[in-house]
Image 1 (cartoon, rainbow, N blue to C red):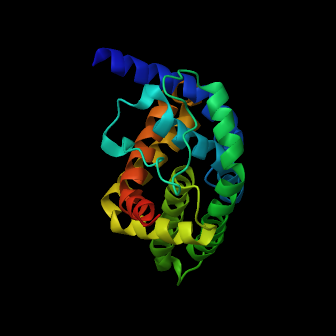
Image 2 (image 1 turned 90 degrees about the vertical axis):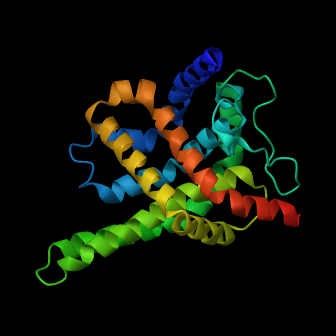
Length: 240
């Protein structure tokens, strides 16, 4: 057990560097902006540009041997023609080369799938900022925040579908991800809390968070999102 835990932590620390490089636009905004929340249009665009890096991290959590000590969400779905091929070979302990391969193969699909949720989140964030400045419509801001949260969950769960499935249009994935986010609302709340804590940690203490805790937090996000998406993934695999 202790050996498995050590392998998990060692793999997470090595993945941190690859994740920082792949998600550099988002990391740069969080670290360098004086008030990242006020720069929300740029922050959302940077998050969208970092989607391939996040998808590659999800592929590492699914395939890399060091992360196999996790919970039952590691169910292998790659045996079907609908399932995406594994990016890490059995016993492959390296991180950099398989991560780069996953990043390259998932680049186009991850950007296309996350484009609609990111665009809606940007429009809603602009509207929420305008509503907050009015005297009569500011009561609508909480509803706008809920809508932005659903867009974020749609984006993250959609990347899980991109990682797991070799088929499906971007529109089908976006719809399925939205349904999973709403049906498993309790897991969605945990995912949002972890993402918020990770972003706050990067803003206030970037070095220790990016060096140690980033991939551990992202692993929890991936586990929640994959558990939410598993019923749809199983149904898709069984139909093929």
